[in-house]
Image (cartoon, rainbow, N blue to C red):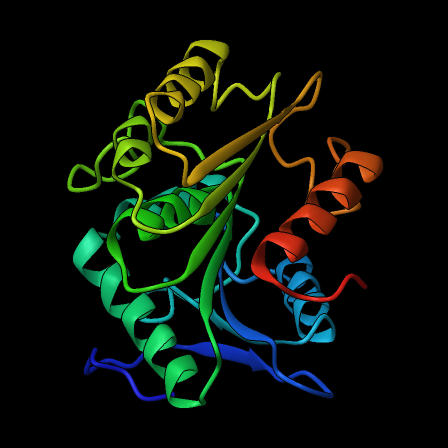
Length: 228
């Protein structure tokens, strides 16, 4: 995939077997492009989407990693200008392929990026699975999520766990207040008792299969795909 970054941007793509109903950029967690993330991307392709999974860490030390200290260094080494270049490349590639619309879907760190994209980029919709940064953003040049929620330019859907330490109750209340202030583009779903990471990796002890399946069905419907 061509990149505006002279160092190049790694990207994995998945094509649906039949008619393309849209394009989706999938944004990874702090750990990088992991196998559970690729499983989710394949499921999106099976629902009819052309999928691009860019690696925001591709020009650094490699990806993925299970080491939190290493992953934190990778995350903290990013900036919004670089994130935007990566997303612009992926979005541009999808549009050049002729998809009828482009969505951004992200988990955790990638979920925060998806919310930012919904307020900033030329896309058609975005979905966040438990993205942090609602009050204290991941990067100094990214507005807090509660600020971005008031600036949405496309429909956005967010899934959060009520017991997630990265999105405490006050942060979720402020997010809802920002949307209830008249911004009809955004919707938040909060699952009682769930922690961070409830929706992606089935081997994670925090995984909640029932709520994860419900959120996935709603995300597919929101993006306009078929239910697998």
